[in-house]
Amino acid sequence: MAVSDHVDLGGFIEGVRRRNPGQPEFAQAVQEVAEDIFDFIQDKEQYHRYQILRRIAEPDRVISFRVCWEDDKGNIRVQRGWRVQNNNSIGPYKGGIRFHPSVTESVLKFLAFEQTFKNALTGLPMGGGKGGANFNPKGKSDNEVMRFCQSFMNELYRYIGADIDVPAGDIGVGGREIGYMFGQYKRLTNEFTGVLTGKGLEYGGSLIRTEATGYGAVYFLRNMLATQKNSIEGKTVVISGSGNVATHAAEKINQLGGKVLTLSDSEGFIHDPAGIDQEKVNWIKDLKNKRRGRISEYAKEFKGSEFVAGKTPWGVVCDLALPCATQNELTGDDARTLVKNGCIAVSEGANMPTTLEGVHVFKDAQILFAPGKAANAGGVSVSGLEMSQNSARISWKEEELQRLLEDIMAGIHASCVEYGGRAGSKVTDYVRGANIAGFKKVADAMLAFGVV
Ligand code: NDP
Ligand code: 2IT
Image 1 (spheres, helix red, strand yellow):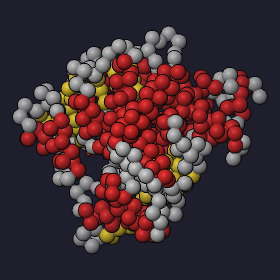
Image 2 (cartoon, helix red, strand yellow; image 1 turned 45 degrees about the horizontal axis):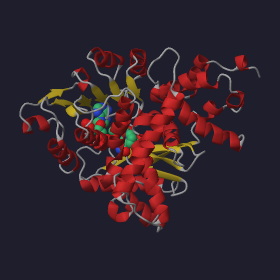
Image 3 (tube, rainbow, N blue to C red; image 1 turned 180 degrees about the vertical axis):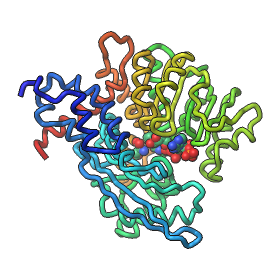
Image 4 (tube, rainbow, N blue to C red; image 1 turned 30 degrees about the vertical axis):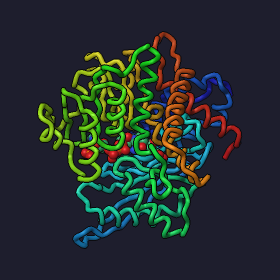
């Protein structure tokens, strides 16, 4: 078949939308990748003939199941759980579990698709998957969360395994939830294996896994700035979210001499012109992880700061921005505001936090823009290192893991630079670089397998 006979980008996206009705997030993630891959594979017949992108955009399987649990008042509650196993060409399925009321099949399919490229970029042998449930952990007691996690695992355990599929945390799933799920898996199977990552240090967890996503996103930002002989030192930084990724990004920004102005949650953002220093970050970690409180409480604790209800922080003037909350939290208008206010670099700690329109605004403005699949890969990278440590039944030292994390983030940056050149652009197109580098590795493995 001549290359000109192949379906065009518009037709491909239309097909994705038609085959996945009511799944806008999934279609959006596929489109963002396809925009670059269509261009890249134009003269590469094998990738067309073997329908590689079409196959990566069709998950290997989507498993959905009922999760029943009993709340503290004795009511029976019913949630829906999923595991999306997108692609295991380069290693076992790997990716987090999200517990949030906004979780749908579309959201998990987009996340599993993105994860496939992200995991390829890390250089570690991990395929892509994602799971979760439309369960809202907010306001639930520890016992309710435990019962939910156990019930979720009662179904999930059939589909996962240390060499099959290795889940981890994501929104609403941290150390507490991983502990409950690991405990139930162990009880059901009578097996102690590295079936989950993000585990507690006492039972096979890895040092710096908790910090890795936020730290990695800041290392990636530092690497991008270094290409322009610039640094984080003395820069003002706007961050969204106040969970695992956001607080550790804030911590690393402080360590590298930047000043964090904002953090947020789904109810609004806090603005502290004096800077959210390490002591304040520690207070927030305690608020979120122990007291399970809301970010608005920060403004009552720290004089000179304010809580802005119902808004995102992108209007605050800054040099650097790190969206670290959730998908589509930064719109085209937000992107224009950031560019107008002089923001020079954006590193996505969250997955797909910028809308497609926003991505195009950043690309057109030629500011440094790191997509989540590159910038937030530090978390899954240390998860990969946790898997290696579990297999070898050893624990590496913190300095070694820190070094490996920085090396992996530098490697991802280099891959993006290698594939992210764009005619007429003086800056690396990191979106293109990440998409092509991630695609190439998975695609070449798939070619080796033939049609399966
Ligand atoms: P957490 O649950 O620890 O924190 C999530 C934060 O995002 C909270 O502040 C939460 O506010 C906010 N948030 C969640 N949903 C929404 C929403 N719909 N609108 C506004 N704010 C929202 O999760 P993480 O920090 O782990 O995850 C944050 C992002 O980073 C996600 O996109 C995740 O996929 C991504 N990520 C996480 C990795 C990890 O290792 N944990 C690895 C790579 C990416 P509230 O409390 O009000 O809900
Ligand atoms: O989006 C992500 O990369 C994660 N939530 C972490 C996945 C993992 O397996 O550590």
